[in-house]
Image (tube, rainbow, N blue to C red):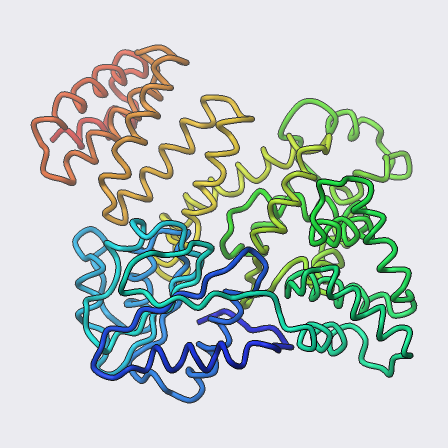
Length: 492
């Protein structure tokens, strides 16, 4: 597990106790779900439980953390390869094969952020008492075999303790104590909101608590539709420098998954040095001198602000460091930052930069994996999926086709053939419509689809596609082109 818990965890002691009692029922299959609204602390509860019992070795078989928003099969295969030292054949091994080879003894399996029961059901471990399942979800699951722990708001005293221990840490006057209690109540005793306010107070120690509370209420009054927690987001946003806001906007373009910080650095570098779209960035570079550049473009011009921005976002709990070089946004914060990004003039440049970096990472993860093919393709796939969603609304169809082709290829590498095929078909259709039936990129798409069919033993479907790709390449590129040699080789 790379996940780290919060430094202050309060008010859930009874929930932890109940959770453990339900999971430790002997000789029975135990499935427990922590359910509740966003920001209530479901993931943190599961994480604290997992870390506690990892230390205490309660589950000698394994403690396996899975993100239910991402492909579960590839995560299970990766866990088996990385932590169980199993030799994995991506194209033939499935989740059931891995579960059967988990060590003897109780195993804790956590599926975080379950969206639909049907999404996880095919990948669940076998109905054996040694597998203890803990789910986190916003759903009220109706399955009879799932026991629900409904997480409500923190108790008032615990909410005050969370605010005090993170953000105040000094004696309070009776007036300030009353304000703190009122603030916790106004936030609905929601852990995420209280934690964000507490971190804000920690980095702004000279700001009176009364003034912070007044600013929050003022933000909410500006837009009656704002929830209190959204007012907290807005207050934190307004305290960020423009460069830090741009950094937040860039982060919102990645998926709700772990992000390698080197990708963010590459995105910023690309924005700063290589105009990826004609428009405002080109006009900016024509100014020549930094002193003449508008302040809102500082992130794209000044490398030093990137590291300061990262630290600032972590200080305010707007960004979480989840491992060495790995960071992640809370889903609610990602939505908020994405809405802010859509109002920025620089959004188009950011989208193009993230598109290029993620596609380059997809290619690198296959050609030069630094760790393992399954680990690196599994890490990049959710971000490539997110890039496709964004380019489908804001990019060109040719960009979409390229993204689809790469995603299909990574799916194919992992043996996810049924997911790869419609993407290859869609990429082929786009290229035929946009480029014409005789374009070399159409030949590439035909070759890709034929290769998928070949991998599945569907030779009668693969052969005519290889022949068609060869014919296009010969006519468009000449008989001595390397792509023609590739087509000949594939057909053979």
